[in-house]
Length: 73
Image (cartoon, rainbow, N blue to C red; front, side, top):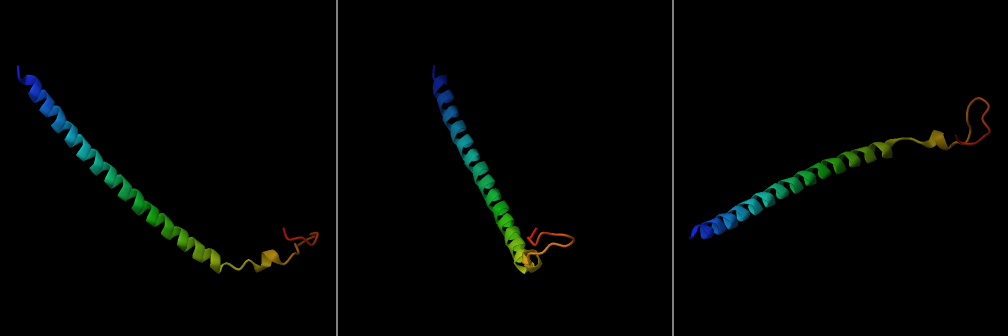
């Protein structure tokens, strides 16, 4: 007769365990995404530094070789 009480207790404990495991899993996924985003932002900063060092002056001079019409590109 009291087996339904044990089933209820087991269901509550199982639900609590699954909730804790799910929160742990979600926390590790979020921290993993955070570290991936940090790595991506570092690489974008490096790319920005490289692009800042490029000399694009010859592209803006306005003449093109071999019969160009005097327009840049």
